[in-house]
Length: 125
Image: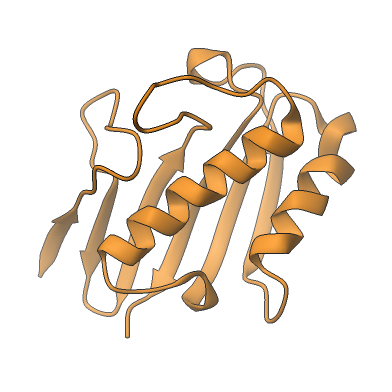
């Protein structure tokens, strides 16, 4: 059965979608932007943006009752792949052991002028 997951600890959806949806043993977290959930501000630096995105993903995962250790797959969207190593450095801090499968794609633009957006799939406990 499909269940909508929402938390005030991550930015509200900026369109007709949910922060996350669980179904069975899986959680699908929508692409998260590097927005501060309280202020709506966005850092400029790619490392800070990556950290903000992953903190938002972590908050949504926790609202669903799971953790970053249960991440199965992520997709990273970046507007400039020349910044990949900087993004990857911060990303590795959130997935230090048994990291999820991942795809990284360069895109022309992201909402709100973000440099990075990440979506994720988790296993629920």
